[in-house]
Length: 33
Length: 204
Image (cartoon, rainbow over all chains, first blue to last red; front, top):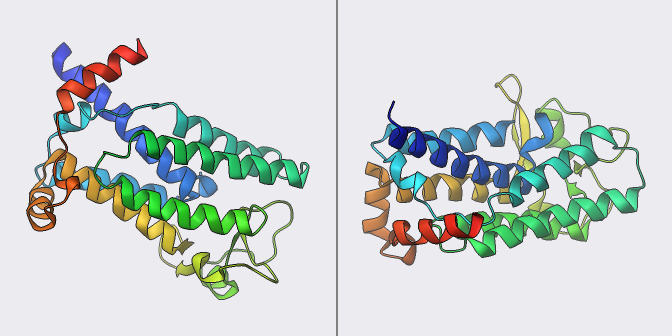
């Protein structure tokens, strides 16, 4: 995997994780972690 | 867990349906740290110190929604976040009006196999004189379905908004269809490259 591809994977994962954390916070999805 | 799984599946579905992960990587998300910090705070007050000072726990719970609101405002141009915001406002206002607890329908809790009267602080539970009870956890994803749980109208908006946004941002087949049919500002996830650079500079 090239550095460029790794960068895309990391940055997209970070962005998606933050948005999903937002869902957990406002949707109380953390409750069953 | 139900909502989290639904959210993850919503994002992944955009990639499965031909969406571009690169577009997601270039999405200009500001203050990325806010949601994880708010999430940690919620886990602490619910899972670690649920028997602490009720007023303090309720205050922290409401504060996490303020943090979420700030994140949404900073990222309001991201497609779908309007729906997430509506869902968050629905949940957040209802929680604030009910002393830090989202009112739940007893029948929904029973259907989901959850305790109707648990001990300690709960973020969702039956209240004797709930305000706006119809905005609480009134729906059930019942047992014996996996991840049985209760769900609010706000939750549906939140997961739907994230899924919609993922499809539009990643330009999946569904996202392109939604963009064409809506013709709204959400259909124009504009200039990710320029904003991404600005974002990375601010984080440096």
